[in-house]
Image 1 (cartoon, rainbow, N blue to C red):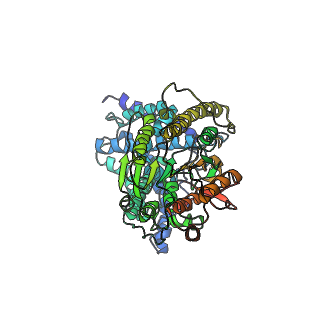
Image 2 (cartoon, helix red, strand yellow; image 1 turned 90 degrees about the vertical axis):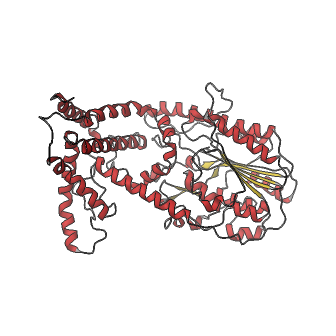
Length: 556
């Protein structure tokens, strides 16, 4: 494509982009924003210079974006065109998914913040799941790839930038990068194709630093002293993305489980919700406990309490997100005696292969504390049940979105979600009990968070923040099974009947410690009330994606 039409095709491609996505341009950060360009400087002169040059550099960077497809130097043209175009694609896709349906155009401020990008990078292992969930964006992705091929192709000689002018045309980009490094990311409010990569780079660095800090944290030793052990086997099943009301409670109760109803989870996002749960962090300490170091804590984990009480510790991980997920570090793994990682394909068989491992461990001799991280029903829901699987139980109706198109999307989504939960939860529990459980066994089942099913007028299912977060993201099922006729079991049963829909995850960790044999009074003093106590006066869950910017959502 060396003839003159090469550059004309580039011009047409740029015009097409501007026409199709023109609604996203008014929300771009302004070149006249007041930005602190010299966060590390105390000089007023530098501040004045920074305020003056920012609009110049902003406009220059916008010009560089338009000119980059016409650079004759492929070493500059191809990477810059790729970064700019896919940054814009990412921005458009995320905003379309998270935009409230009754708004016109796009949000007034369409800049994706670093917190959202941090969440994306933290959960990058689930990229393919996200693409499958939001498959309606595939035509747009294909279109962007085709446009990229045009923009990255070598331009014609007559309409191109040649020689030293390649560097001149890219100079504003180099200045933006220098400013970003100097201000430690404070200059990321540039046009999306440049500003988003800066924010994304900042997010990648932040996650890497957080992981490095967390890896060097070591939990304190357990200071409580266990007494008599109440059970021989204690099983903690943590499901994924299961919302309260969508499991077959009648089936669970028929199998002898105590139903605590809609329980409030620790958070609406897996990584910090699971982290809080395994360490028994208390509401009074949150979210400020995460601000200094992110998902890092010196609080003892449930593994340490189990080992100190004389239990073999067994971890079965069916999430498939790698070894170090949800704040797990080497120190935590050092307290686990047996680890099993399940990566079965197709996805809908993974939890059932984990069940086979669970039944084997249960049948073994001696005392054991078993923690199962189920794969559950994280989107894409359609990959969590066999094709053509018949639905045996359906959850409650949910609030309809405002937009008619979103109502059709919701109808399909809820249908898939019902099938996923029916297969992954109802069938799973039925098969577990068909194998039988030993007499002296305690089983606790819950989920890390719930789901939003388009009630918030967006396609975001969880990890949301602000006004679009719905209570369904933090409401999860909670079931307990034990057959012993003791004051402990009778109190759990009575509280499940008398205080349905009143508890939260913050009462589950103390319950586990008491079941492991630790004195109830000492546990309550250190970790608060348990399921043996009346429910708390207030309930809430942490919401958001970036653990440094979490906020509370209270639930009635």
